Amino acid sequence: MNVPSYPQVPRSSQEWSEAFQNAQEVESAHVYGLEYNSAKPLITGESYVAIKPGGNRRDDPTTKDKTWVARTMKIARSAQYGTLVKLHWFYTPGEPEEDMAADGQTRKFIASTGSMELISLASSTIDFADVIDRVLPVVSMPLTSPQFPIISSDTLYFRDDFTLLRSETSGQVKLMKGSGQSICSGTCVFYGRYSPDKDILRFCLACGQWYHTCCIPLSDAQRPTLAPPGPGCPPQPPIPDNSNDLEPMFECKFTAAQYRLWKTLLQLPIQRGVHGVSYPLSFEYVVYDIRTQERNHGCPDDVFDFINHHLHVPSHLKDRADTFRGALFEMLTDDTYYDCPGCDSAI
Image (tube, rainbow, N blue to C red):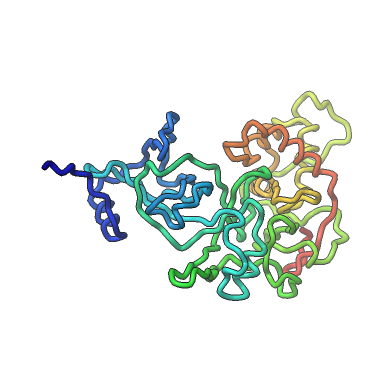
């Protein structure tokens, strides 16, 4: 009697690890999914991907209606198993519940997360690359710098430096300590916590710190405090009273109209969140670039071209760039500033 032979599949983390070590690392690969995907998405070593539950996934394989999210860390091709991938896992929005928290700090963090916020999980596994269903657009949110790009209400994101450690026995999770988890001042009414869907923040470039607007006093200033020009910045001309807006200003490449617009853009605060918007819409990155350009080089030759190149819209939202650009210019009417509690700058 002939007994059919089946390809051996790694059955433990050690066997998966050995299989990956014996494979040839590659920079990218096409995947087919558990159900053949004719699109064959291309993954790289830094792709965010959606994965359907299965027998060697991190959770219950019977929950077929679920989709897990992971980031590809490394890709390798094995002569025996085909393309393999090392995955770093995330909790999906709403997945970790407050009663899963091992302590009060973790419980409060879970309660603060946004409706589209992923949470990094201190867990990585190795699997067949074809378990990947599709590539996802995911954005990283830093809390130590003003470099969060513009996102839409349905864009997935995660906060840097926030990772949950899960107990394999109790299933409880605990927030691992990180250096960039706390914001605001010592008198913060939220004890340094940030709720992306609710809070409005202002950033002080001099202090390198985010503050809740409700935790800091209003300022009498008519404009934000700007850093002094850098040593290589050329002298900037005064704003002309009368000029031909169709021609460049004297010894400049920009017109007077563009120069006046640039000076108005410099009055924008570095803010995360917009009043009346229930997700972390932010133009902080482009405002940060405007401040950096002003300090190092002054007004650019073409202000509109500068904005287009520094709007920082993720690739999956490029078709909405005009809408976001319009929203940025609508913010030019906001002239409310706050006093930074760390250095008294107007922010």
